[in-house]
Amino acid sequence: SGDGRQGPISPGPQIPSAAPRTRPSVSAQDIDAALAAWSRLAPPTNILVLADASKHMAEKMNGRPRIRVALDAARIGLRLFPDSTHMGLWEFADRLGGIRDHRERVTLGPINEPESGQVIRRSRLDELTRTITAHPKADSSLYDSILSGFRKVSGDYREEMNNSLLVITGGRDDGKGTDRARLLDALRRGWDPDRPVQIIIIAFGKDVDRESLSQIADAANGSLHAAREPEEIIDVFLAALARRLCHPTCKPTA
Image 1 (cartoon, rainbow, N blue to C red):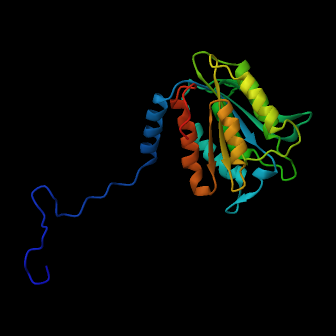
Image 2 (image 1 turned 30 degrees about the horizontal axis):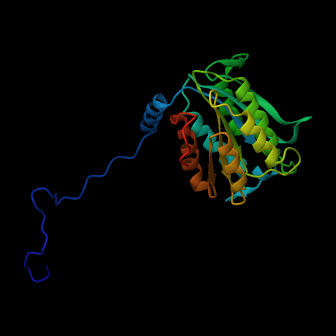
Image 3 (image 1 turned 90 degrees about the vertical axis):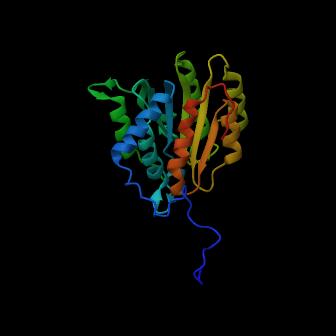
């Protein structure tokens, strides 16, 4: 104390008085090792990714288009999937695929095998996370695309895998096709507890229709994860992918 007397608390034999040593910065190798360990825990996955390329994903988040922020996170998330994964990718917006509202960019299949030619799916998916752009004048066909994607995964169901539809979206449907009530009815009728397909939705921005998206995810025993700010993106994405550790018939916690 100030008068030289011992204070009420002094370092004892179990309390170190020296300053703690700092840990070195986490290296890229440390991160890769952690990702590899995490991937070994995850069940094999059969997953179709829907990427929203509508005008809502052209809007800015802190100066960058939402789609760029979202797909940068998706590229990191892609590393979490082991080579046993089956994955495909569609992008969607109104009239994007001509008479359809989605365009298949990577067919659903083994991630470590080539779709065609010599390029394996993982490499093609990595490339597309860098090159897909949003269409500033295109409305969102979110509901139609979710229903088509759900039916695709259900039709390509794999017994030994966790079967999922992962939706990356600006979080709104512009009402050009299936409405929410019809979508929910179709999902509830199509969801089979013996062949479960989860819908996991990752929504970006401050104008996300959380009520509708929560109902849609719940209809397929999935989950909604929303990020309002860019700094939340990675945590939200990893939380969504962690759903792979949950059996597809378990109840969502997020």
